[in-house]
Image (cartoon, rainbow, N blue to C red; front, side, top):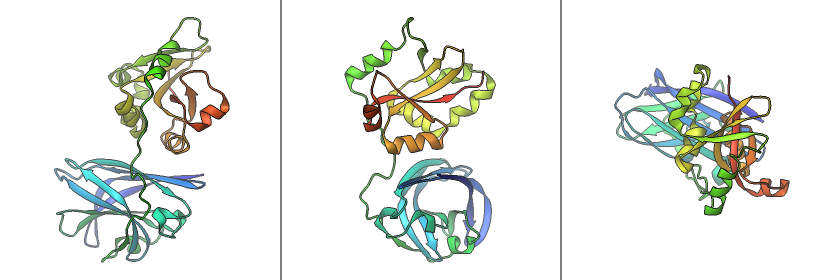
Amino acid sequence: MKRFVTYLYLYDGRIKGNNAGFIKVEINGEKSAFLVQIKNLGKYSGKGRVYLVYEAGAAIEAGELTVKNGEAREIYNVDTENVKDSGKTFLQVLGVRIELENADEKFLASCWTDNTAAVIEKPLKAQADLSNKEKSVTTPKPEPGRQKEIHSQNVDDSPEKIRRIDISELRTLPAKNWYIVNNSFLAHGYANYKHLVIKTDTDGRQYLGVPGVSEPQERMLAGIFGFTEFEPAAPANAADVDSGVFGYWFCPLTI
């Protein structure tokens, strides 16, 4: 597994401008993922086309994102050995380039090799996305019966105490934990399920839980954002957990 973060910059032609966010990458066996986080574009709103540049002037189209009031956030998933059915591997990618609509010669770029010139070179010849796969993460909703199973864990005879919270309650935690409010994986899970949980183990240690499903793609993304442990919401054997049951992705809290 390989993880890294690179900064995203605004370019005007070949002139490098201010920092405009970052790219967070995880290369993990057959599957890889990268997060695009855009900030500091002022009042700009519009569409952006995201490209993975693999040589000077040549790229693979990864998808589209929407910038609103200077900010955007999107996660993309690709096959490590065959990115978007292009015949190129993710290890051949030099960096990311984002073409902004109605922005004249301005674009965003991030390079994680020493070949920045290739990433910012114009014109850019792009291969279209041929994979017909989802470009962003979608998490299935739990079945109505499983929603009851969530509540069944919050009982006095359980060795570990689990309680549901609203995202607004994160600010009641010790200040060292406040950074997690901006965690993209947490925001995605909360948007889908409208709650989080806090688990307290028998030694008094606390963990923050984000609802989700134990499927390989989601496991990879959870790990990128620090949620490395999964617990099913109801008793399940190992085969069930591997096949995609509903539960919670946990990360430790600082008390």
